[in-house]
Image (cartoon, rainbow, N blue to C red; front, side):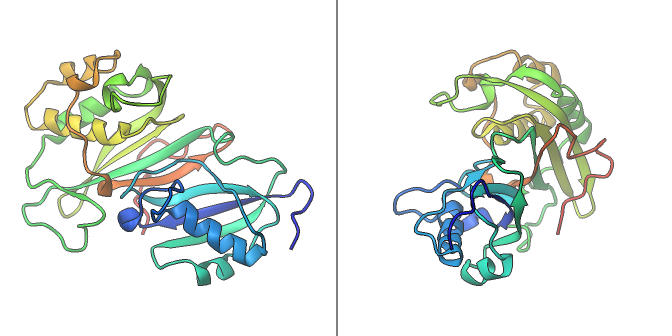
Amino acid sequence: MGVGAGATARLLIEYDGTDFSGWARQPEKRTVQAEVERALGIVLRRETVALTVAGRTDAGVHARGQVASYSGEPARSDALNALLPADVAVLECEAAAPGFDARRDATSRAYCYRVLTRRARSPHERRLALHWPHRPDVAVLERCAALLPGPHDFTAFTPTETGHRRFSRDIVCAYWRERDGGRLEFWIEADAFMRSMIRVLVGTMLEAAGGRRSVDEFGRLLDGRPRSAAGRTAPPHGLHLIGAGYGGGRLLGDGRDAHFPG
């Protein structure tokens, strides 16, 4: 099957990131990109299919609404899923506007970080949420999150050794929500994120909620402090990419209707 002149396809992908070395293709490592490109190559009868993605997730990070694109005609999602492993699925594969680029055209990305605060661990949540067997001060978490919207310098929230050249990010919205069963969810949407940024934010906010730093101290970290001034990096398995926005609208609305899918 040839590549249609100017044709572009858009995919919506869901995956459990536990057993992947992240999204991006890497030599001799199992990645989401490699699995999806392999399936596309078979279905489209093409030697190579190069995917562009809205958000390159790290090892162990999950996705509920990852968006990817490639040059060519759409493939049947059921045909792709027949070739994909059980921990990744293509929810949609459809024609997009010619030249659509899932990464370049995205105006925002939204994530949710899940924390289980009950005393006993959960076998069902062990791959999907951080088990934090301490009761954090939720009011402190909410006050920290309220400081995030707007443009800030997030140097303190990404590794010192980094390829990033721009450390300012514009946060569209950020908030914590309590759920039944001792579950907490941190929801955040921004124009873009740096490597480990959300996980360091969560780890630092949990420290504040445990009395190890004040809300004011947390706020001062948003002025470009060094990485050493912020808290630990929360583990990857609690982080879920919820989706990417296109056209400038908010993905998470006003926050009251945010609900973890599935």
